[in-house]
Amino acid sequence: MILAADYPFLNILWSMIIFFAWVIWIFMVFTILVDVFRRRDISGWAKAAWAVFLIVLPFIGALSYLVFQHDGMAERSAEQAKNQRQQADQYIREVAGGSAAEIEKAKALLDNGTITPEEFSALKAKALAA
Image (tube, rainbow, N blue to C red):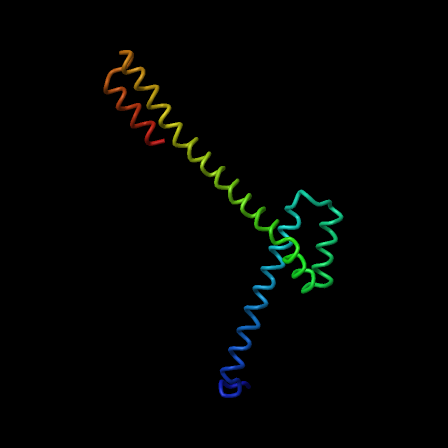
């Protein structure tokens, strides 16, 4: 049975450092593989070659990819973040714009005298609730 006295603090610290380095390594390899397969500027054979290189020689493969492709990785990540932001903004505009358009139509009907102010208030409350 291992007691706390049999496993000194520096060994615990070293074990934690090794474990977290391993977790970081797994994350880095996963990020590289995601970037490789997301790329549209290389062929399927090149993607397969990078994947095999990362599996057969993991340290050399990962470090060489980071050295040779670091600018491309950053650009692709920034482009993806920009696209996601634009999609989110467009969705927000569509959702918010629907209510504003309904209120605008109801206001036009009120100005034309087609509906009463009470009906306008009801339509406005309905549009804002949706």
